[in-house]
Image (cartoon, rainbow, N blue to C red; front, top):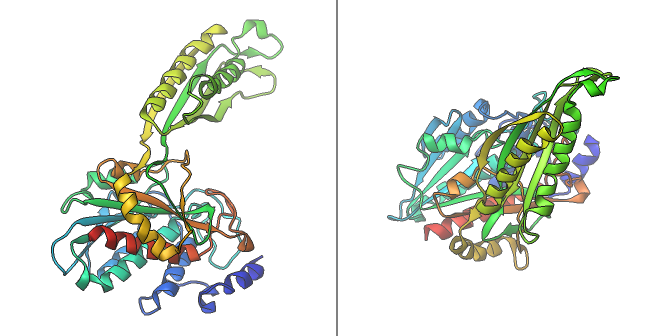
Length: 411
């Protein structure tokens, strides 16, 4: 597998020497080669949320080498770099890159596969860091012609742990306050060479619920003496799945997923308790509120039908990622400039979630998507899959797109 993959990668436009085991790259490399080397180094050394010590150290060193004002330990392990343009006053543009990996055992077989057992960059954050540092490099080289400033936000703990909130608490949106915010995601549902962008909601809000179904346990051969928690849990799950099909308008979008059920200790024991855990997703606040209302009602009313009771814990998560329509329209020509005519496509919103949403609630901006799919090198697997991979040309396109977007907003 490794040899086959190496042959396929070497057919790309990048230097064959980068196929060797990656070391921390150097600014002495041409920036495209440096970007690929950075991605592979980060991929080989994944770190989970709020544990991104090595990654943050490399980021801070690189930003300082580029002459930026750097703050470390922002939101625990985040890094801020401030690049001040030298061509006069202007707006401040925030460029965000997330840094954390996922608790997944990698199933790929190449020389730069994860060296940290149980951790993997299975969502592309390794590429995001490489893109962020490459954008910083290219813009630093052009600072004499830039008006305003660029604030680089290298964020920890995007994968459900609220790293963006922590960085906001530590002042990432002040001194100076950004006028615009930009972020991107490499995206394997989109073919390489294309950029996906849309105005309005592009990713959903995400809330979490945990329900405790309480009954009365007993012998599996004497069900009449019990209040079966498994039976109540099963009916509760079925009832929850009716919410989207029967309560949400057909032209609206919503998801209710029960992803975890825990109950029982033995095949012949009827358990007295069951735990359900799940998530709801929506684009609009109205649907979001409806989903929560109906989940609460079902958890409260379904178990009593069978003689039991239900208790619910609701965990409010991230809001939807909403792009500013005026910013998107300003940036489309910049994206077409780097991707070429016909390669900027209307992004189909996804019910996945992203905590960049908390930044875009306060700062107008754009979250866009860089195609990373390439069947020839098996870059076809979904995000969060143990064989996730991207076509690395997405790093080059993403860098160029973010540079042009930033310069467009700086004016």
